[in-house]
Amino acid sequence: MRDAAFIQSTNELEVAFSSEAAFRAWYDHALPRVFGFVLGHVERDRELAEEITQQTFTDAIRDYRRFDGRSDSVTWLCSIARHKLADHWRRLERDERRRLHFISATDPDRDEAAWRSVDERDRVMGALGAMPAMQRAALLLRYIDDLPVKEIARTLGKSEKAVESLLSRGRDAFRAADREGGDV
Image (tube, rainbow, N blue to C red):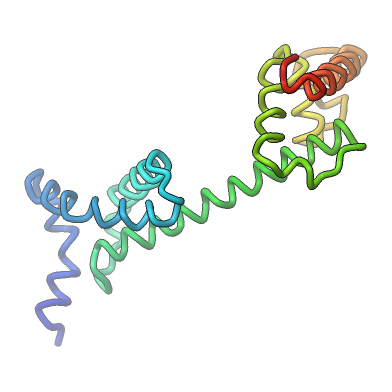
């Protein structure tokens, strides 16, 4: 036979979602604990911790019926947050790989290790941001998404010759911006 503590934890979220006052009490109890958990995992980046905490509660509210009561609801929330953190780190790694791939593809003479510094990444992002939109789009589609010129032409609604021209001018603009510190 189940004990009272198990029954209470099983019904904890159902009770919390039964009224606005019950939800507010549960949320006020859980929020600081979940936020503290997340903040400790994101090097004290408050903005990122707030975002991940918000995503955690959004998922929990949407899927609260999945809570099986085998743990405290805050523990369950922290496990959701842990998955959100893992998603965040994977996204960061994927973005960094894309940037490094783009950089090495547009300037093969560069030492890839040199691009790992924050200053270099910021300069690359600044240079890309200052480029004309079509050149930037062509470069990103080519070197980040690995699309062939024919596919880029179809995507951008341009001829293949026009895309080759955009790529050439974009590479030149990118190299010039790199030499000048990020300004195209």
